[in-house]
Image (tube, rainbow, N blue to C red; front, side, top):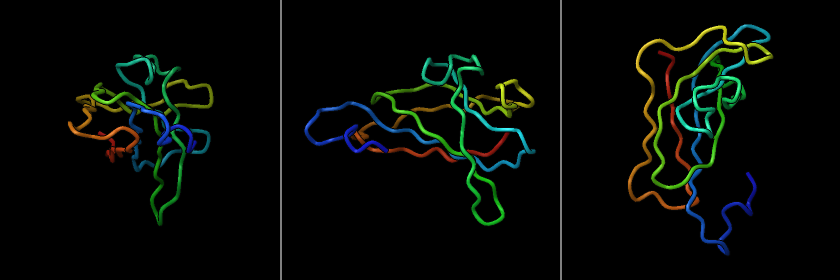
Length: 117
């Protein structure tokens, strides 16, 4: 994290949103999050946000973050992609809803922990 991004000297109206999802992939595959707004690719998977894997015990947890304005909301889904962001698999069912809680303070971080649908 860039400490200057949320320094006390600046008045900022942004919030860091982190995504976390447990999911096992095959070698050469990655997870990304794509959604209904430009910062998440506007449903264009090639412009989605690639997530990074971290092993936690026996689980593989994928995570990543974006910075958004307070009051932000959107829909999003997760996709399994290859190295060129070609879609190999996607979540079925209803899209995830991201709605920031009222009263969240600028500079705070919200973490969304999801499960593959």
